[in-house]
Image 1 (cartoon, rainbow, N blue to C red):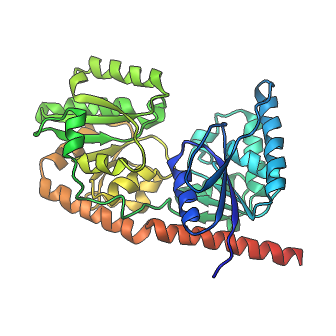
Image 2 (spheres, one colour):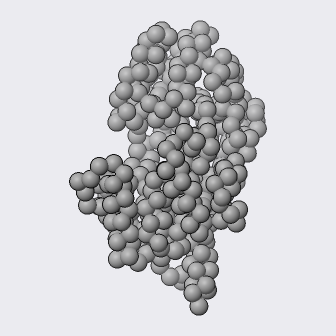
Image 3 (cartoon, helix red, strand yellow):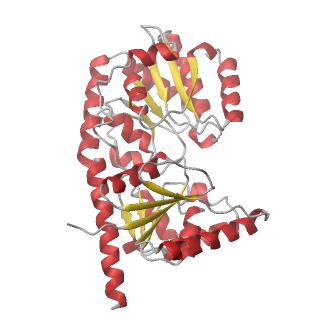
Length: 380
């Protein structure tokens, strides 16, 4: 039987993507620890949660102080692996700890140049340095490998690994009658789901989704859009409400607070079509989750979509910020239920073949153990 590992994670304490990894390794009998950046309480079952003490310092001085606190914690815990989630911010803490193996999970904006370039120069230098200290940087799309190389990261330290989806939890055929009633949907409502809840971030193009909805309703007057939103992003929610009002679709644009990972499969099953049309992305897990639930997708034409989607076969691909193209694609799906089902089934098969959560976690554990073996060999 393999020995248990002590794994110290650092990242956003509200992120489902981190919890999914932590849960997998708890289930495998490992000793899993978590530090939230920014600081936040947590109650993940089986995970030991650590709070960094607050320090009365301004801005960058507080970040530096907390990095040193994380270093002290890591030296006390003596983890086998430090795993930072996001090369921007949390990985600075991981690098400061000086523990190896040190693994970084990069998710998109922390490496992609179109999102990275506008950030402060000092933070860009810190992120580049941090990435060069890591033993392995896990990326979720092939296009991110090139972005990592531009930061000076050796290619042999970059690894492509999909986020992975729990195929038992995310599956088609779930009963959504109670959810329809809860949201207030009529029996004949056609549902377009927009799951990107970062409603105050322009790159997700939620204004384009609203514009497309106005076009869709000319042909399908019972169509509604269910838009998830982060309740902490109140200004963004209000802006979308105003946009929907101005477009004349306020009653058909239903803003719903983002839900737990356990409830999310119901929303994908509720949808006749799911739209995810940002201007830039690493590889959003929402796309894999929706596909696992056999929900047909409309996605924007980005680097990652070319790796996963065949237009018209397992989804529809549209140009960035093209509301008419989004509307036309959604309408084509709404008009042909058989085609929707075929695309959904093909999308489910894609996830089963390439992004099974269990197999992805197997690969991640192999990364940990291989790095530990290599690190010990170097010390001998």
